[in-house]
Amino acid sequence: MALQSGRRLLGLKFVRRIIAQENEIAMFSTTGPTNAKSCKVLVVGGGTGGISTAARFVKKVGKGNVIIIEPTDTHYYQAMWTLVGGGAKKFTDTSKPMKSVIPSGCNWIQDKAVKFDPENNTVTTEGGETVNYEYLIIGMGLQLNFENVKGLVDALKTDPNVVSNYSPNTVNKTFPALQNLKNGEAIFTFPSTPIKCAGAPQKIMYLADDYLRKNGRRDNVHINFNTALGVIFGVPKYAERLRELVSKRNITVNYTHNLTAIDADKKEAVFEILGNDKKETKSFKYDFIHVTPPMSAPDVLRNSNRLVDSTGFLDVNKETLQHVKYKNIFGIGDCTNIPTSKTAAAIAAQNGVLYKNLSLVMEGGNVSSKYDGYTSCPLVTSYERCILAEFGFDGKVMETFPVDQGKERRSMLLLKKHVMPTIYWEAMLRGYWNGPGVFRKLMHFGKS
Ligand code: UQ1
Image (cartoon, rainbow, N blue to C red; front, side):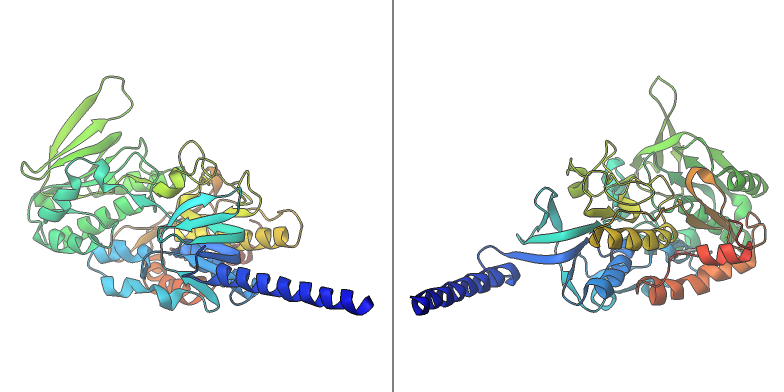
């Protein structure tokens, strides 16, 4: 009797093991019938937020337990594209192969996430793989919607004087166009949507201004900053300095002007005037136009109703970075609805908070670390100088150095041009940069 039940037990164990093995094969095989994978931490996005958080969590949860879903094979340091557009840095110095920045121990699925199912903890890719996760980090960045401006996609292809620093496909057009600009109208636009690096639309304008002055052509070119916004910058301290700057540099600012169409044949750009009820538009002739395209959260996220707010951005708690509905989902960077300026510096500061809070959740606790909205925008004002804007939620100024950073400074441009790239590639993407918060506290003797 005892022997029989012992055998039966052994048999049962054996059958269970076979079933488990089959399940395991199904879970990890990429070609198996269910095509499913499983992991502890799934990171969607191989940009700044995705790579820097994956680097931290793989150290915590171990090799093979972090999967990154990212379709592209190149990782860009986009913060450098202003200087590429200005001819001060090489485009080839702003990228690395994706595989070289995937943290070791992480599994990379080179595919596009096409479906989120947060109720069942799965994400499905375009290639049909379903990835099951315990914890999900979404860092998908922003989508550039060039097609939302009529005629722009074609104009970018056919007109050498229509340029944009915002895409790897167009950033290399900017400097040659500037070199060819001898006289006439130069226009720099800012759209009516949230964008990444809200300072970039005017940084390239200040470089263009400086370039034209240095080449003796500035008097022949009229520079316009046509912005959909009603202010030049969101933080009053820096806005004041920038208003002084544009007036000193003889730049015309047209507020509430939102680009809606480009007619490359007529060399005309059409702007709708926002804020008044009657639909008014105004056409501007251009000899050079730098376009900042409208942007949004990526379509796949926008269409995931359960994950996003009414604006289509990932709905997270702005301080804890935890999703408002799903406690095992966190968001980082540009695709979130965190009300701060979308920059790599913001992601750096969010990194530390996300790591602490998700670690607490993994250990069965509650989130406790709080993000203060820190972000930084090195406002390049010439080839030699920059205003290093640093601020948090509600425009609170949070400067690192014990000097007035509202002034144009050579030191801050050197920091942006020569120090930040090393911090980015060597520290941040490896999970070792939480932004300059500790230095700020040290330099202000612990006061803020
Ligand atoms: C920063 O932390 C950061 O993230 C990597 C940037 O992104 C490129 C920046 O441009 C800046 C300015 C910061 C803030 C760093 C310091 C030292 C003030």
